[in-house]
Image (cartoon, rainbow, N blue to C red; front, side, top):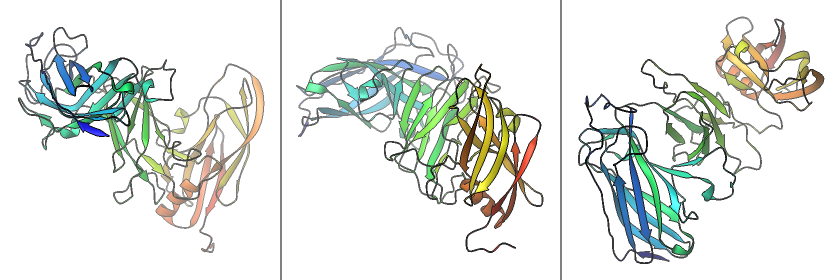
Length: 431
């Protein structure tokens, strides 16, 4: 049963900045600390027994990095759902800062007392590498609400401007009073880097999201950060997702649909996707907004599909292997007999199409089998691997129509073996 709050109590604590801000403008970050993101601490106390809450923003002293900012957390509409032991609260952000606040605008919540309380509708959930409890919401140690799209048509908060509200839903076992800690962070200049993309149903199976292709939603994204933390987030109704980033390094992004399918489905794009962020001239990572995930529309295969990458063949190899034999079977399956070294016979292999089609007669493409690990053992094994070439079949058909494709099978040594891949629909006779 839902019942509205009987009384609402809000305290916004705004104090003088502990650090002076200098050199500020609409496009220049304030000096001191991290000049691109600014943060402010927050606390909250909710008591569902009498329908009260207190939200506070704390600025002195700031125990987090980045220059401090001045805001208020504005709460309203506290509602208690006794049947599901849930509490909802609408929260907005009001700027008391003299300079504009930009995206990313994220409020992070953590440190629940008692620890059994959690948030069930956050935009982000962060799991540290040592998290051991993975079966409930409580394994997330930090929750994030993204206000980046709620700061008006201009995408920023001016002094005394208030964002749109976002509903926070807490799971509160026993519906007792509880408190939490956290912080809010904002960009101090526009267009800060982020990693973003779209999950979509790849109707033409070309590995690229076309404007008219339907979204794959809901889908869940897991991003492994360079420090080992993992951030979980969900797509919006149009399949889009985005996450602000600060640190250069390797990010691994995985689109997870296992929750809705008995096995990992076929994708026309790499999944997981590794994104190596290097600092730009300003020291910030360069933005990457093409972390897209396309779901195959053809019948799922028992065999892993060929993936696509722009990386050159020489940069893809890890462990050593040698090609013993290869053949096309069943119209679009590649069977490869390979020998490889390692410590045990069960080794991971992935097949990539490297780069695009090379214009010749017939067209060519480099195909690279990647031995994903390199072990310090000299034992020798042989095995056969089968890969589904249907994503490559569709890309060729879109580019050229029916015909022959020369696949250059690039090994770990200087030798390259060539294999012709006939690409003809069943009802299309060969010339």
